[in-house]
Amino acid sequence: MAELPIVYVDMDGVMAEFDKGLETKLLQADPTIDLSDKSSDFYLHKRLKTPEAVRMAQAIANSRGFFLDLEPADGLQEGWQRMIDAGFHPVVLSKPLSSNQWCAAEKLEWLDGIMGPKVADEAILADSKADFDGVALVDDRPETPNFDRATWQQVMFSRHYNLNVVTDFRIDNWRDPNLESVLARCAVRYASLFPEPLI
Image (cartoon, rainbow, N blue to C red; front, side):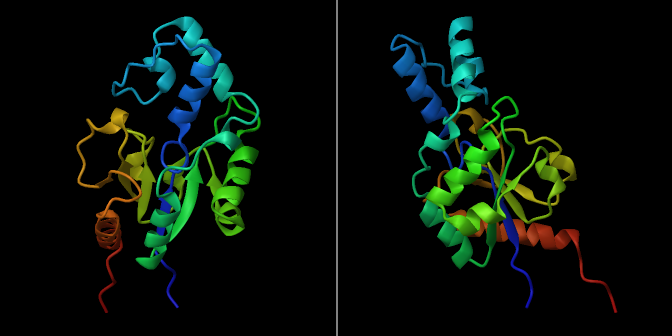
């Protein structure tokens, strides 16, 4: 039996509400903090107005329990099942925050609690996502490092900081009705990279 095509799925900003969790804790620490900048900068700390706010955000993101407390994205479980039903094998592929010593362990614990032990056991935590072979990577990052040498096609998961990215491969959220068709186009693209040998 042929293996199912792999779709990699990022965690922060795709499966887990990273910015929402960070903003909530920032406002708890300082209700006067200015979070009005919704520009296209990927990093929330670069959208903050003062050095003190940046230091506060970095301290929160590096704190124990931060990644464990993040809310799941709306429709996540439904979207995950839709990928399976469409004939794909979704696998978590996430880069841990190197400045947070608890990040990797908390990501796996979060996955176990939210998505179940099978998803957690199959999850890949790595610095370079381009090293892994698959048909697609669902990610919110506007510019994924080493994208040009990856076999997968990035599917942009819409957030305000990536709406300026022009791509034919995008889903707005996990309830997007185009999820299956976008992944099907990724699979076609992947197959074109490895044409059948002539006999």
